[in-house]
Amino acid sequence: MAVLIYLENWDGKFKKLSFELVSYASKIAEMLGSQSLALTIGNVEEQELEKLSVHGADKVLHLKNEKLDTLDEQAFSNLVADVARKYNATVLVLSNNNSGKALAPRLSVQLKAGLVSGVSKLPVSVSPFVVYKKVYSGKAYANVQIKTDLKILTLAQNSFELIHNPKPYVVEHLNIQPSDNLLNTKVKEVQKLTGKVLLSDADIVVSGGRGMKSADNWGPLVELADLLGAATACSRPVSDEGWRPHEEHTGQTGKIIAPNLYFAIGISGATQHLAGISSSKIIVAVNSDKDAPIFEAAQYGIVGDAMKVLPKLVDAVKELKLR
Image 1 (cartoon, one colour):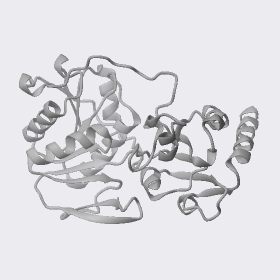
Image 2 (cartoon, one colour):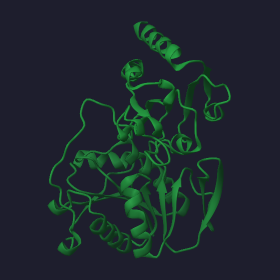
Image 3 (tube, helix red, strand yellow):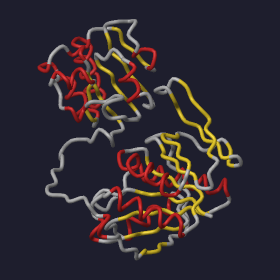
Image 4 (cartoon, helix red, strand yellow):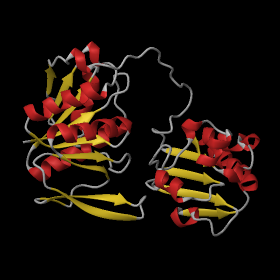
């Protein structure tokens, strides 16, 4: 019996998300009285693999092959399924990000396993196996029982605290050759965004909506983000108008994020937008309409014109940084 964690790596490096997954899965392994196995695919250095044991991985499984340098959903799901069978995994944990959402349903079919996506807490119980998750865009929650022998969970980002639980570093380098007929993805060009905090990784996000009134008014918002070391984001109407790039769109039809601090500047708080940011730890809202729905989700709110409030926020942060 084992709890298997599939860990994505980015150019051979792990992010905070990876360590959240290991921390979460190691606790489930303790509840089940089994071991936690951390699986990663790709070219990762030994010192980077060793970091996984610090957060509770009993064993690290490393599968390296030049053919697997690029995520191929069909090939990767087959490989993860093979590893799950080999080590008699009873629980498989992935991230609820793009790669996890792509792999988990395939694995569910191949392994005939029950799948619950977007969990945010440890199981309520393991016999029966019941997990907690938010539903209806975070407005309610459900306890879901999984009855299959193998259970698959995808963990919501930034929903589980990192746990310092050092284990002896044990690594097993796997020699599994992917079938060539499963490798169908070809990367022709890679363009990397540099010099900017990625929205999906940011601890702080400064986001603007139609209350910003025009694409010409984003200077102070970008300045505030730079001062805070934050990523910039926007609501869907803003990206639809072309005021900001579509990759900054957060919400049900955009990116779903869970930063520690989210500034909603001039955003009314439509249900679709709240669905993408409701997992934020702290929400600070600025809106001229005191009845705007965003205030119901926010921990802190300022009723006022974003064009007048935003420069004052910038000045306040500058003053704090000078102290």
